Amino acid sequence: MLRYLTAGESHGRALVVIVEGLPAGLPVEASDIAHELARRRLGFGRGPRMRFEADEITLVGGIRHGRTLGSPVAIEIANTEWPKWTEEMSPAPGAPAPSKVLTQPRPGHADLPGMLKYGFEDARDVLERASARETAARVAAGTLAKLLLIHLGVSIVSHVVALGEAATTPESPRPGPSDLDTVDESAVRCFDPVAEEAMITAVKAAAKVGDSLGGVAEVLAYGVPVGLGSHVQWDRKLDANLAQALMSIQAVKAVEIGDGWDNAARRGSEAHDAIVYDPDEGYVRPTDRAGGIEGGISNGALLVARVAMKPLATLNRPVLQTVDVVTKESTVSFRERTDVTAVPAMGVVAESMTALVLATEALRKFGGDSLAEVVRNRDGFVASLGTTPSSAVGGASADPGSAAK
Image (cartoon, rainbow, N blue to C red; front, side):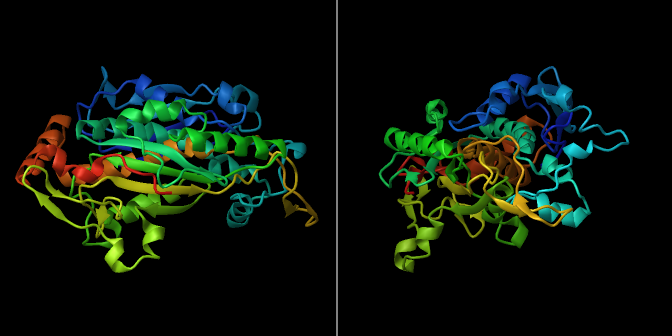
């Protein structure tokens, strides 16, 4: 069972994550985490903070000589801006200067609900933790999950399929595991060059008027073995846990598994994936409308999830109406540094959240205190299915197809 907790504030000294349940013997280096954190900073339309945010990583515990010990892994991600914020974010007793108190909550943020819930009069007491900066700690945890999944034959790729009104088409290709670098080289992490240009144009247009854009990232998990998750209880269903994990990403407002929305408009005869048996490939699906999950259990096909992010609520022009919580007068919300869009980065975070769910279910299914034992158990399970390893973890439908959105 994999568990993790994050701690820290956006402008605090550091973010911290503790990951418990990883098997012993998993190779891990700080550079692995640094690479994924650098990917999280990608994307045309990001703010200036991404250019000087260094994400200084310290492996605090649980790793010795480049391998996990089976004990909790602790990682610290230092905030390179901390020297500018030591007084305002100090944990010592005191109070911020009156001019620093933020009393005009921003619509679309956790500011006002959080202030009312906890009895705060300063929105910074809420926004520092609610900030998407927290996802850096999740990406660090997700890196460990990805490293484990690689040894189980699972690879996860994300790409942007919509940014504002610009979108890929049903004929647009899907990236495979070997295409991740190509996706990351795109200014908006889009695998379709034509759609990429339209997305860049949309970002420029929004930036010109101080506005923001939302969009959709698609997450693809290749090589997911059959049997992860369970139908026996509501909180064991793989698709439900994926939806919860992906929905927890800041500013995400919708999650779709497979052809979820399209299937709602189809007849039953057109909405499901036929089952075919091939002597060499085992059970395969000519289509993948279910997105690789049936009845809460992975079915061996390509796992597909789409994650919709709303436009960022902090804008580069003061237009969103709010109320000062002290004077109760109508005003406009304050502005923190912001991006025009963070959808490309959200895709990277969504990869991490998907990896954490899949790694958790893989450890639940295969078990083991060491990496060798987990892999051995996985191989034994695949062998028991009487199929080749490739068919047991994807079959024909694992090939990249159309993005369909």
